[in-house]
Image (cartoon, rainbow, N blue to C red; front, side, top):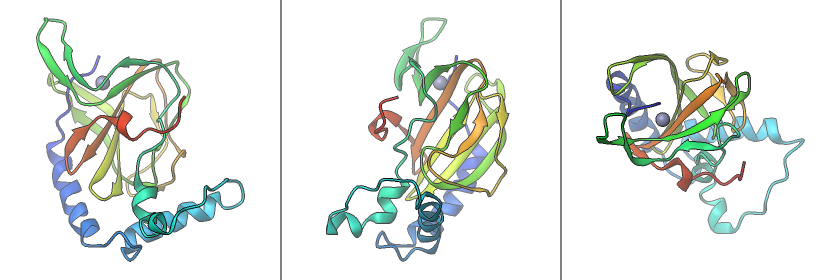
Length: 194
Ligand SMILES: [Zn+2]
């Protein structure tokens, strides 16, 4: 039961931050992206199996690690990205995916990043949802998670891919990916099959 979101205040935050992010390069010289990737690599060192990267991929390591390839939570999709029919029969844009989930499960960050928003945001219909988290990943990529039960992260916290950021509520989790402020289909990034 989600409409499109409006995040007027977030746009300012995100644009402000992405200016700094895009000033860097994709060859690992951007301090924010490099430190974010290294922070998460250090955590994963002992356990993770890492696929070998081609020399071309090595040059774009920061970019590749910033992509939101995880699914935020296991579950069936109750609504896809794109035009959907509202209760009144009107066609409206659904700017993310909804994932059906039982309560009490972990909602995870889908890529490494920094928490840039935790709190209330206005929904399309003017209804306020006070369970919204936004994570900035660099390269203009921001992910949004809403409709959970309890936030487990604070503003400005660094998170790694797969790290729990919230506890789910029974029902639908709305998940959104934006590139430079424009919502895109999260499925074009998700690589895990859960
Ligand atoms: Zn939704």
